[in-house]
Length: 405
Image 1 (cartoon, rainbow, N blue to C red):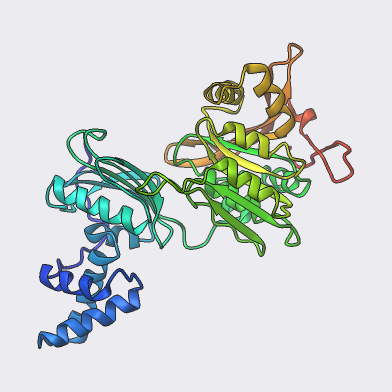
Image 2: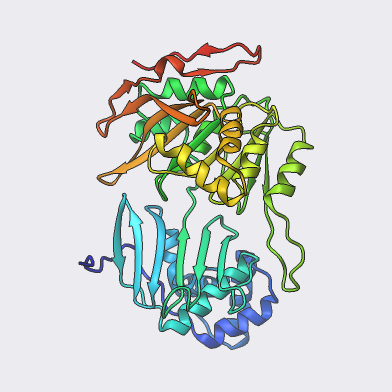
């Protein structure tokens, strides 16, 4: 049964449509917030309308939301406690805060209004959204992750999903403080990063894979160069030397596509110390495994999976989409990956639940053996693969990781 509507953010006043149209025309495609404010003031002055300081600030914010922001959804995106804004219909808007989904009383008008909002946000993200291209996955200028589907893919109304980026990435220490990483597990993860293990961060959607990966990359020594390759830029890393590469979709003429394969090739020519691949969801698993097999140790990627031990089956399924047979996937993955770090969600809490070691069975099949398991209370217990939890230092020798108890 749906939760009762709960107010989470103070709505802003609805701006005069004529003022919005006038400001949009005066901007001419510019999106800088300071320029928006200046044009609002100029438009008001031209119409001989005088507003007090408080009313003027409120009007500027409301017009800015409509012109370069997310309209009625912008106050929700500005709420520091909100991490996701989900639109199922013109009167069905949900937000996630403190690990729980709550419905909020936001009125987006009708289905046409939701579609218009989605199309405008897609344009701001530099993407195309129309009947010929009814799906979009992009990033807004403020870093918000945008996903939208038009009918009939989404039923009777456009569906919007907005993921709000954190102002500053978590550090590994902060993830320990909030309970995402068990205290006994932090030294293990830190050592894996320091010893340049190739990591695969796994878990379901919205469990914090990107958050954990960003925190781990923050532990990389400052004299190393990190090259991040993603479909849409999402990973924010606190590190002095990070280069971000993002794929590009085709333009309206169907030209200009730049995919993961090309970006990985470019990344290899950029003198990377570590190559990081974004989310692996399909046939791009071939490029991910290829990139992590280039001799650049300490690489990372993320993957959807139900458990660390399910990773081999998941990789085989994705490999099949890329035309790779089971043995090829096993050979590539066993060479490319050292450790799987799996996250889980329970009772509204996200946490690292397993650390597994990648290997091959006697028949050549790919395996992941749990080395450390963590229960919802934060207790870390060594698993059957603990003695195999090893990484390759620069010397090429294997060394066991210290830290679990």
